[in-house]
Image (cartoon, rainbow, N blue to C red):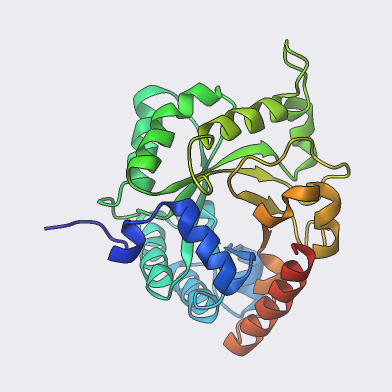
Length: 286
C-alpha cells in the first residue's frame, strides 16, 4: 500500500516543476492562511478551535482552486494544541485536493537528528502533515539543512530557505559581512543556487526574500522559486516587486495574507480580493 498523501500525478513530479506549472495556470500569487485572533474576530468567529476550523475551511474553499500556493502559518494552528494541528492536517488535504500546492510556514531550523525529524514530519509523504514544501531557517548554518534538502529531493518536495526577510530586525544578521566580503544573505543565496545547479529546468529549493526591502537584492536569482512576503499590511505593493527583484521577476511568488483574508468571511469577496491581487502581481511579474 502507498502512503503518499499527494495525488499520484503530483507525487511523480519535482516540486519546482509543479510550482512552475501552477504559475502558468493560476499566476504567481501565494496567499497565507493566517488565522490571527484579530482576523477571527473580524469574521465574527471566536478564538477557539471551532472558529479556527471555520476560518481555515472557508479560506481553502474560496482560494484553493485559484492560487498557485497556499501558505498556512503553522503557529496560528499550533496555539490551539492537538486539535488545531488536526485542523491544519485537513487544510493540507483539502487544499491539495482542490489543486493548490501547500507550503507550510514553520521556519524550522535545528541541527542533526532534530532537523531530520522536522523534515520527516512535514516533507515525507507518509507523514500526516506532509505538505508540498516547508520554510526553513539557515541561521545555524546552511549545512544543517543538508539532510532536509536530500529528503525533499527524494520525495519531490520543496524547501524555502530564509535569506533576506521582510522584517526590519533581520538586517542586523542578514546584512552582516562574512570573511569573503559577502553578506550573510548573499551567502545563503549562493548556497541555494548551488543546490539547484544540476536541476533542469528549475530547482525545488527556493528562498524567502521580502518584498518590502528598500534596495534591490543582488544575485537574487537562485535558479528556483523566490517567495516574496510583505504585500499589503506590511507595506509592499505589486508595483514594488520589479525594483526589488529585477530580472528575477519570473521566479517571484508574492505573498499576501491579511490583504486577501480581511475580505472574508464571504467566499465571493475572498475570491474577488485574491483575483484582483493576482492580476496585479501577474502584471508586475511579466
